[in-house]
Amino acid sequence: MKIINHLDEARIYLSQGKIIAYPTEAVYGLGCDPFNHQAVLHLLSIKQRDINKGLILLINNWSQLPPLIGEVSDHLMEKVRATWPGPVTWVFPKAQSIPMWLSGCYPSIAIRMSAHPIAQQLCKAGPIISTSANRSGLEPAVDEQSLRAQFSVGIDVLIPGALGGALRPSEIFDVFSGERLR
Image (cartoon, rainbow, N blue to C red; front, side):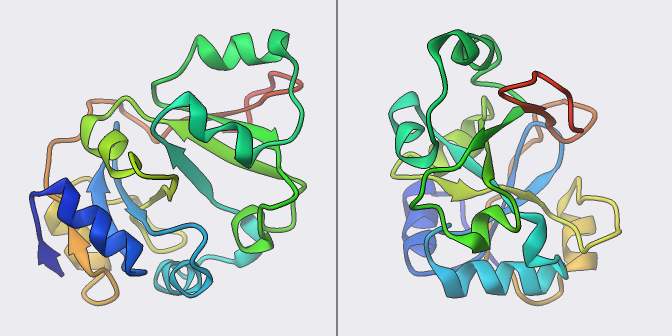
């Protein structure tokens, strides 16, 4: 696992299909290019995560959202606007272009616009995967030591940095019902 501090370099690794670990609001996240099928399958493999569960996409700005989602009324989007950027994930109907390896067995896609400066800058050029840095069933990594303990291999790059201070990974809400899913 190579440690890098330059986010421009990290984005190059993402474009090459590499897996990165990075700080978020509450825990370390794992990310890759969501549209690189092999990278996503590798990420799922090292996490030991079922492809049918789906993944969260992290976006940098509002212009990155429309190509990822289906129709959502302006009224419903007001709830989203009130929470972004921040540690809140929203589940939207997915755009037809969203592959199954991102949405799992669902007709929806989970998306977050992070307020964490490192996480936000990583997806400046386009959305990335944002999934907690843990093997399925284990606690998410909250520091470099716990990250290395769970992932001695499989992660290409670590971007060190402080977590954002949230106590738990992002809350997840359904955009249509407003129901809290996590």
